[in-house]
Image (cartoon, rainbow, N blue to C red; front, side, top):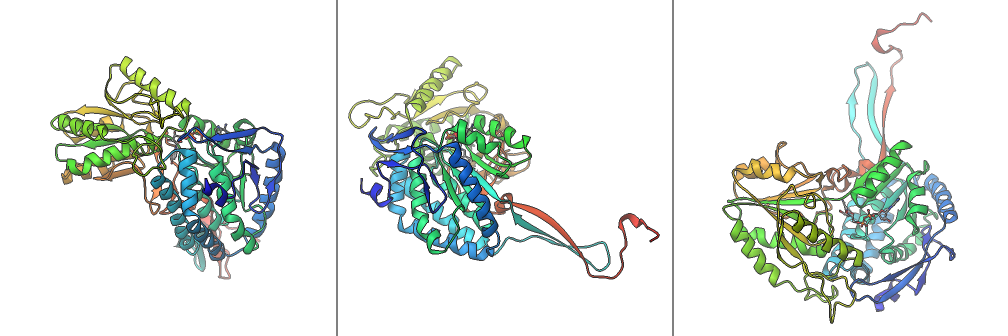
Length: 510
Ligand code: NAD
C-alpha cells in the first residue's frame, strides 16, 4: 500500500505527539489495526501512558500562552497552510480513511475535502470573531462584548469520521486561539497519526510552538477518563454514542467544564402523498446504506403515508436488490464493511430483536461470507417493516437497517411519530406541498438540530452549524456561529466621562 508510505505510517507507530515531536513510549501495549475491508493487518500503534498525557498537557498550557498572543488572522494563515497540505495529501489520506475505517474511497476523499473546506472556512472566520456593541443606559459609557480563547480544548472523536470531525473542531478552535488535544477512536488511530505527520511541516515552517496541535492515543479508562476529569481542559468536544456522551457530560459538568456533545441520532424521513419519489428514493437509499449505515446522520426510520407505502416499498426493494457490496476501495461497490465483527453482531442482534417485537425483515440482514468477504465485516443492508414504538426502533443501531413505518392522516401524525424518539439529530421530509414542508420546519415540526426538505438526512455542508437536540447532546460544530462554543464571552463597559453614577441611583457620601 503506497499510501501508507506517503503518509509516513510505519509498521509500528508512536501514539502521542505535541505536533512537532513524538513521545516514544512503548510499554503500554500496542493497538494492532487491521482493515475491515480485507481483514489484513495494516500497522500497530504504541499506546500512550499517563505520563505522556501529563507531559502533553504541560506543553499545551505553555503553548497556549504563546498561541493566544498571535493575532487571529495570523493563526488563520497557519490554518490556511494546513488546508493546502491537506489538498496535497488528499488522495493518500482519503485512501487510508477508506482502508482503515471501511467507507468507500469516494467517501474517504469526501471526508478529506470536508477538512479542506473547514480550513478555508476557519481562515475567513479568523477575521470575524465578532461581538456586539450595545448602547449603554449610562451617559458617557460604552459597552460591548468580546470573545476570548479558552485554553486547552480536548477533542474526542468517533470511529466513523476518523479525520473530518477533528478538523471541524481543531481548525475553528485554533483560529479562536486555543490549543488542541485530540483523542481519536482506538479503532482508527492510523488516520490520526497520518494527519499529525501532514501538519508537522507547516508547524515547523511557521515556528508554531510545540503543544498547539497535540495527539494522544491510549486506553479510554486511562487517558480518556483523565481528560474528562481534568480541570486544565476547560472544553471537551466529544463525538460518539449517547452512552459515552452521557458519562462524559456528567464528569465534565462536575468540574464546571464546558462540553460540546455530538452524540447518536435516530434519523427519520417522512414521505407524504405529495412526495416526488424520483427524488426521495435515491436520497433514502443513499442515507440508509451509505457508509454501511455508520453515519450519525444515517436514515434509520422511513415514515411513509399509507397511500404511497406499497410504491415506496417496491422501489426500495428494487434499489436494494441492485446494491453491490464489497471492497470499499473498488469504486464499483456501493456498500463496504462494518467497522468490526462486534458491529456485525449488533446488526444481527437488532434484526433478531425487531422480529421478536413484531417487525418483519423484508430484505437483507445476512452476514456475507466467501471470496471478498474474508474480514467477516460485510452484511447485506436490511429493510424492515416495523412500528416506531418498538424498543429496538427507538435505539440507534449503528448498521444499515432501515425501518419502514406506515402513517395515516395528515402530516402532523407523521411528525408526531417522527419526534417520538429520544434522539434529535437529522430529519427530512419529502413533499411538494408547501403547507407540509413549512409545518415540518415550524416550531411544532421536527425537533431535530437539522431539518431538510426534499434532501435526505445524511451528510451536511460545513457552512451550517452541525449538531442535534435531546439525547444527541445539543452541541454545535462547524459553520454558522458554532465558533462561539470554543470561546468565552466577556462583557466590557468603559466609562469615558468624569462622573461616577452608581447603579440603581445608590449614593455614597464620600
Ligand atoms: P463511542 O461512543 O464508542 O466512542 C466515541 C469516542 O469516545 C471514542 O474516541 C472513544 O475512544 C471515546 N471514549 C469511550 N469511552 C470513553 C471514556 N470513558 N472517556 C473518554 N473517551 C471515551 O462511539 P463510536 O462507536 O466511535 O462512534 C459511533 C457513535 O458516534 C454513534 O452513536 C454515532 O451516532 C456517533 N456520532 C455522532 C456524531 C454527531 O455529530 N452527532 C458524529 C459521528 C458519530
